[in-house]
Amino acid sequence: MRNTFDRQKFKKSAGRLYPGFAVSLVIAAAATFLSEHYGAPTMLFALLIGIGFHFLMELPSCAPGIEFSASKLLRIGIGLLGVRITFYDLASLGWTPVMIVIGLILATIAAGIGISMLFGRRQRFGILTGSAVAICGASAALAISSVLKKDKRLETDTLFTVIAVTLLSTIAMVAYPILFKALGYDDVTAGALIGATIHDVAQVIGAGYSISDEAGDVATYIKLLRVSALPVVVVIIAILFGSRGDSARGAFPWFAVGFALTLTLNSMGWIPEILRAFIEDLSRWFLVIAIAALGVRTSLKAMLELGPMHMAVIVVETLFLFGLALLAWNTFM
Image (tube, rainbow, N blue to C red; front, top):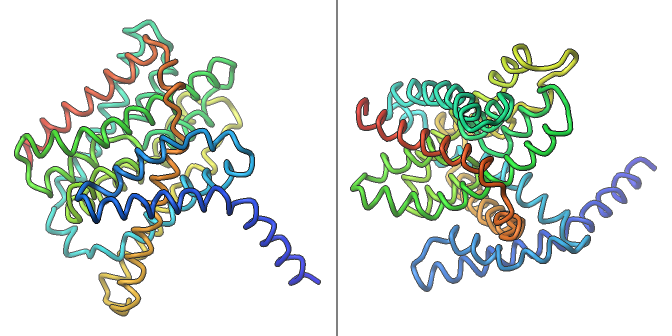
């Protein structure tokens, strides 16, 4: 009876997710076809085509599968990316990037508080936005929000932050690769700067691999260094600014553990080449599907309705992180 119940539950869940997943898969396939025939980045095609199908998010039959593809599938794809990299590749970058990332996170959160108060916003808005910009965008905003003292304004600020960092990440995904190449940076440096400056993980993946596989690998590694700081930052903020009884449960980025695990197995040579190639292709497809779903989730109307002063805070924080990252990499690397 238990096995029958489990199968029925699985079929019901799969049926609920299938329409939205199918839409994302078709967009990903179309983006791949266009990329192969016209030479533009697959991720960019997936994002732009996806935005054109935002109306599908209004359909109850499609929304669950699109959300699944943009979140869960993205995390699985990132976890599997470890098969592309070895410890030798990371060692070639040295410890300097780790120290730079830590410094960027601390400086950006501190600056976020100051910028928020300078623009007449609350300190908690600065903590929320500064952490989102410094670490991993929407995911960090939701995690930080879960441990701050609850009120009606916090809910509004959290929603605003999620939309704003997603918008800025999407713009950066298109603009940063062009900018960094125009500035003459090689693929490794461009990838490192993308990983250090773009807010959301999905857009880091899209921007990095739109330059080259090497840039994408470095961008992923740098970004996951930032993501790995999330649990620590959440706990510290919960202690300093949270209400009694709040906790950081659910904030741990398990996909980063998956990345570390596949990286370790690949470095040890314990993954057969045929299996490694299959996992690499699977990861790439998962990521393209996730970017397509992210595009479908993106509402241009909602982006245009963002408040100017709130938006100014996040834009200035983004520019602060961007400028500081450029300074750090040009000085120490």
